[in-house]
Image (cartoon, rainbow, N blue to C red):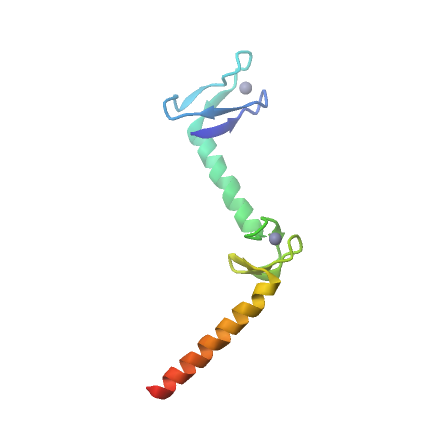
Length: 110
Ligand SMILES: [Zn+2]
Ligand SMILES: [Zn+2]
């Protein structure tokens, strides 16, 4: 199933797997011919260019400057593809310190 938007009558319709790969726009007074393979290609291109141009906040989907920043829109800390609320940051830091001290202690035993 795929949503196709007709560039001529500006109406969108749902293409299902039992429909032909190429065909006419379902609007009776519109002569536009769709090609599902072309549509798929342009969909993929749209997605990849969007990803290439901007890093998106995983929480709200707004573009952010980098993979390690604070989102201007929702105020969450963006680390890689994850977000942390500022109040959760303390928890992350505490857990990391605990882990580091645990590793240090284990190394002493070895
Ligand atoms: Zn149409
Ligand atoms: Zn955000």
